[in-house]
Amino acid sequence: MTNTMTTTAKRPRNGGSASNGFAIGLTESNRVKLALAERALKDQLATVLARGFHGIATLEIAVQDGTIQHVRHGIERTER
Image (cartoon, rainbow, N blue to C red):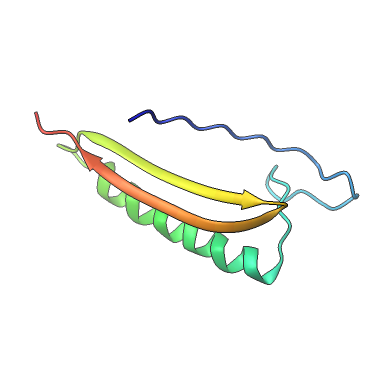
């Protein structure tokens, strides 16, 4: 499994503001799904940033036309 992460943070063309360097259309739907993604990331970090963990943590946010469609997350452990 390949784990790649690409982040592009640009100011929106419509003159909207960027918060913390990220341009996010904060619709109610995006707020809810963004909260899910933040909670998933927090939980994942608590798990993987522990001594003895070997593996991969993934967080995928699917976006279509500026709207977050779904959030997927997972942890794969490598047995050593």
